[in-house]
Length: 128
Image (tube, rainbow, N blue to C red):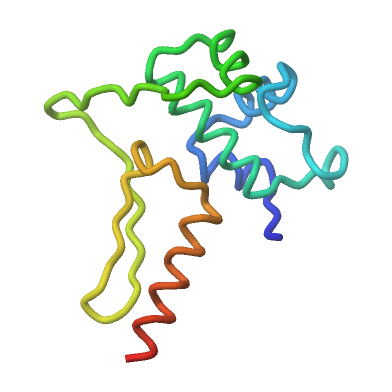
């Protein structure tokens, strides 16, 4: 299992460290592995932060996010994209001339799911 510092978690999720600590304090994100300067975060922490970020972008309050985390709703609406709006996509170079692009706002895949998918495709491309 890959582990990250809080700064790396912040960089990967594009959330301020202070916000991540607030989410942990409120019980929205799991406590880190270890304590103080030795604290580490996993792919699950990344997934939790990105889920909260997505839901708040869709207009849910933190109270509703907490409720959704305890009882996941059937479907959280993805906000419509406005003209000129910036969206984040993950682009992975798999082989010469082959790239995988994932709209992380829509795909609902964790970082480990994306890595697994990319590795499977890379294996298949290598078997040609």
